[in-house]
Image 1: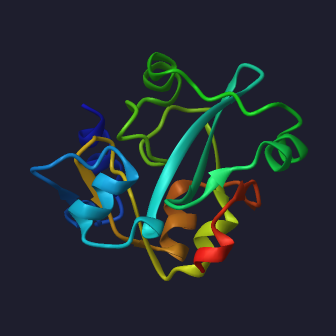
Image 2 (image 1 turned 30 degrees about the horizontal axis):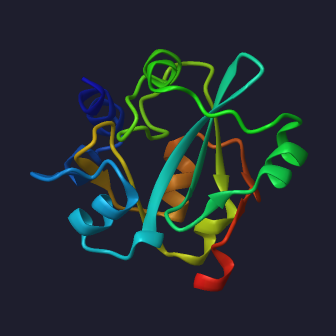
Image 3 (image 1 turned 45 degrees about the vertical axis):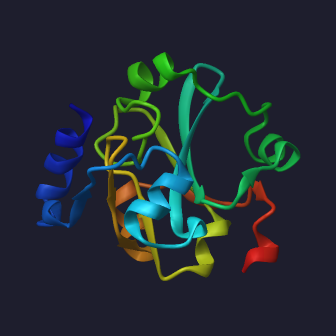
Length: 159
């Protein structure tokens, strides 16, 4: 189970106890915000794409949307999301619980600038009913992010 994989991942840093599991779904941004008790923008949604044959993850604020022209300029390809089956196979987590922790080797991770306006964000923790609260420094450190990118739109007005 993916949440156990994420729990093991955070256990090596003494942080597994910070993972929250809910009785309700947190698979969508709205559901996660309700379960966590925060504004939807504070949910750090992890979007899974394929560039060529390689999976990448982009972690973005809950109120941000991928801007295709920005994405193409940054990654040199049109934004093509993984199918639910591809997400499980290539990333190691099912849609609704995709996160940048405890993922398969070779998956590249990027953090979107839309997150930088918050002190704390809440990404999923491997299941459709979990989350972990992290500071941006923690998110950057534990996600293994390669870089901060600017590939989203529609969030600036919400700042």
